[in-house]
Image (cartoon, rainbow, N blue to C red; front, top):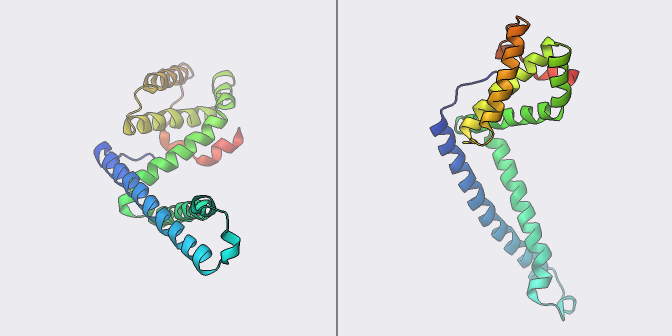
Length: 181
């Protein structure tokens, strides 16, 4: 995956709009789907003797829950449809980076061991990409708490690269390299 330059203000503004839009849409659809399900299954299709002794709150819980699930599925489908639009470009890019970070993090111990103990150049490429892209995401998300620890890890890797006289570029990274560890 190629690292791209992202404008932090544009990213944050669009992310906030998407989050607010998601919450509002989820709320409206949950209520609408829940109400529709209640109308369909309790007033139209149900028989009066089935509801005797039950309060509306307990008998409608399953319909409201189903409404929330349907709303969540609708929002997920909408986000999936919109993820390739220009408005979502930065958010989708960061989301893809976070997925790659997750893949690398699961194998980070093995990758570090291969890079520092065995001088594996492919492991060094993965780590170089990981730390560089992690710094980018942390800056975009204003995650200043762990920024210094990532910079420290990146510095350790840079020292290893200098010591072994290796030159690594972020462009050398390919997602397929992770599967080797």
